[in-house]
Amino acid sequence: MDSILKKYEAKDFKSDQYIRWCPGCGDHAVINSLHKAMADLGIAPHNTAVISGIGCSSRLPYYMNAYGFHTIHGRGAAIATGVKVANPKLSVWLATGDGDSLAIGGNHFIHAVRRNVDINILLFNNKIYGLTKGQYSPTSERGMITKSSPFGTVEDPFVPAELAFGARGQFFARTLDVDVKNTPDVFTASAKHKGTSVVEVLVNCIIFNDGAYNAISDKEARAERTIYLKHGEKMLFGANNDKGIVLDGFNLKAVTIGQGGYTLDHVLVHDAKAKDFTLQLKLAMMGGDMPVALGIIRNVDALVYDEEVEKQIAEVQAKNPVRKLTDFLMKGDVWEIK
Image (cartoon, rainbow, N blue to C red; front, side, top):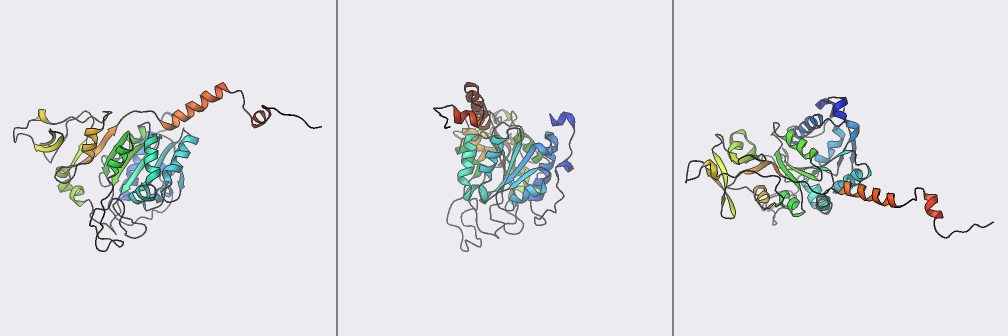
């Protein structure tokens, strides 16, 4: 293990490149959290690969002291899959955005999740196309006025969690760019999960969609408008931790403990490891009058694509004595011309 040989620091994963994100962009906080997470994981930079597609978030490989591949629009998940299958020992990360992964790259995204390839997908969701200067994206809200929808969008957005769960995702988490306390822990947990991990990072685009998450990111509002879920713990939130999530029939409901007959015993305990994702999906879809769920929402073990491929190759090789191309070419009916 690399961690036995050397203890890494965040600076060990920083490249010498000037970071070309706009001042105030949420991406700055995300990469700082990623550097910290990688140091905590103890995996050497030369055993780490960061893949990306196209977009502001996809500049991230340049700012990492690790192997990197800035690929083409929407194809990052496919390339990351190939990297992991070709070299299973690498820790593979995919930096992608809501446009890159959910529009042109939507098919690659859902199939990487479905296959459960052991890659870590960081989905930067700023609800806008930032690099191409402010067009609406697959996660932009209905009615949003942008350069490509001057009278407001007339379509409903994708919800990344809903898409990941629908593709049979086994790990889904969500975090805020400004939550520098918890984000490194979420990234670390995603890397330790065997299989595809999807972390939706709610990122503020200060130029084209500034304030998209103010309702939940401002310090004054965050305690009341978000809930940070932890496996095995009560679903509590609020500035005084006096609010909780309870079942109301088949639905979830936010209540104040001590009011309406609700006690601490009524508050649900988070089970991120439940194979049935019914409740986890309900948590991931909360919003509006309900707090937005942050933290690790689902974390379930399942068969891993690259491990199964490697196992299958070993099984076939064990039954086949052919080891060289010349042996393969000469194993059938052959004759020699003199």
